[in-house]
Length: 188
Image (cartoon, rainbow, N blue to C red; front, top):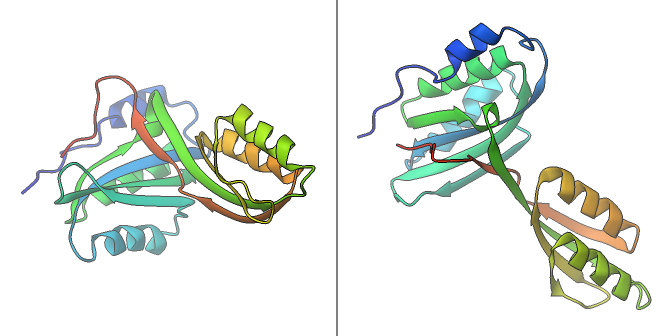
């Protein structure tokens, strides 16, 4: 059985800083939770019942098959995020929680995009994919399919640029995945 953190690790720092407490900003919250039936539902219900919006949600097992890592993106003030983290820690299935955006972090998102492009546009579209560091999965004009992993802003930029070169048929995005830089980890 896992033990939860006794207190949210950066609560004193937020109280000392004081500035920016009322500014709404984007936060990436990572939650380790026990791989049990209903655990995800309980976390999502916490957000829904308190009126918090989840902008993206990603869940997958960790290296420990009994624990999954849930990464979600939400927007709120530092006070609201602190409340979210504290309420999450009270849930029985939650092992640990962290606001990854509180410090330097690595963030990535996966994009799969399917487009239709004319024969004359294919070369320009392939150049756009190459410039962005993406991978062409299918180069057929009727279903030109690309895989790209990058930050949210770069993904948005790529979709806009590629959309000028062909017709966007379908967009699938993973939502943000993130971890702190350096030796600090979110562990059970």
